[in-house]
Length: 159
Picture 1 (cartoon, rainbow, N blue to C red):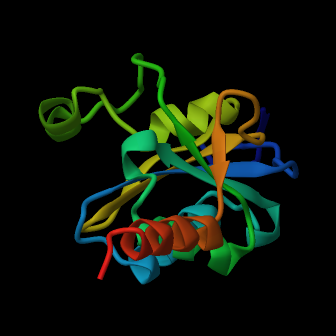
Picture 2: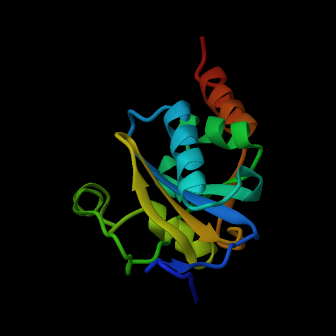
Picture 3: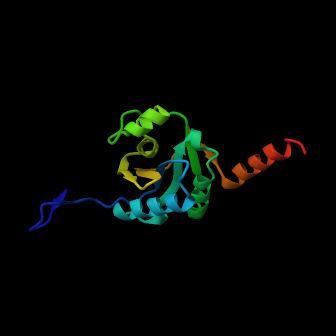
């Protein structure tokens, strides 16, 4: 850490590697809500959108179309995790009551690597940033696959 003359705040090293955005959201969230919060969280953290390597959320949101649309907007993979870390810097009482987990956004970001940005919130979305890319335990999905499986389910339902 380097101190600059006349200032009390330390100058932090700039992270230039890949970033995963952990996303938590309500059913009222839109793709635009998710995109806006990811962009503002990156900017507030001094990171560039070109560093965004993946979006991730909990597997219970796998069929949530706005998440797929946001990943498609950024042209990054979308990963879903079943197992998430329980020890978070900013746990959510609401998420604990409704989902049974201490949080989603920070847990997903931590699954990618060290936390670069803790939980940022908008009305319907939370976002946290992890240094690295989700690999291994994540189940990657694409927007087209979600649409195809939705069409398959409705087409096999009969006339």
